[in-house]
Image 1 (cartoon, rainbow, N blue to C red):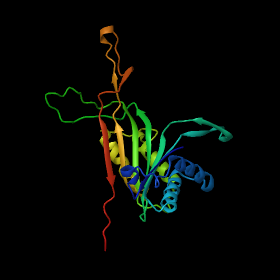
Image 2: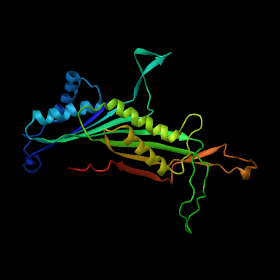
Image 3: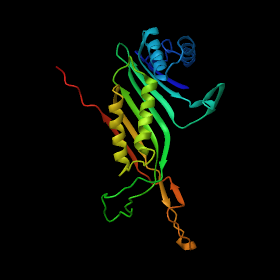
Image 4: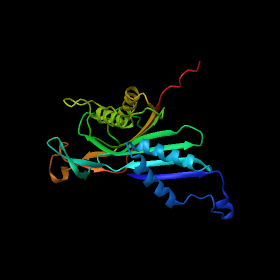
Length: 262
């Protein structure tokens, strides 16, 4: 895993006067992360980030804020016939898991978890029709098209104790894939990236009560049918070309309604 630790102090004399007496060296921070990993273990990246924040806010009286970002490197244990290897792994970047924990002195932590670079594609059951047109619009409507995107999702928890972080993360990931692909035998039609994104967010909030809000980003990674008519070849959506630019970057954040206070 990769960890990034940021600390805020209650003084600025290092910047203003060149007085380094309050600075906690990078070396100390690095060694602390290593020691905590050994002494406390790492059950989840979120729990480990909480341990790091707690340490710096309690071990140093002049630390007023700690922020820890952790990214889990996607190593997967080798498996054959359902049996996992004792000590061998393969790098399997199907998706990257990350978390961000920020805590101020004497305040509860704010915990975000997320998924990034989860690239998914389906070759049908997607369209884009009925959009606004003006004199500069050349895009043709499509009832059936490729749908490819690289999913980024980031969600905030509404509690920091008693959360099964591994289960919650897997549920969000599985929900994203489920709403994108649909049932295995027939799929699910998507009238737009926006609709798929929103439906996914609503289903996550329904399935994981500990999630307070979720942001999802789905850049539209287009595939276009190559025109081969000049070569005398008929290409009926059999050979397609991926295009990086231009492309829309579809984003949205959905959160729960505020609870009534009695």
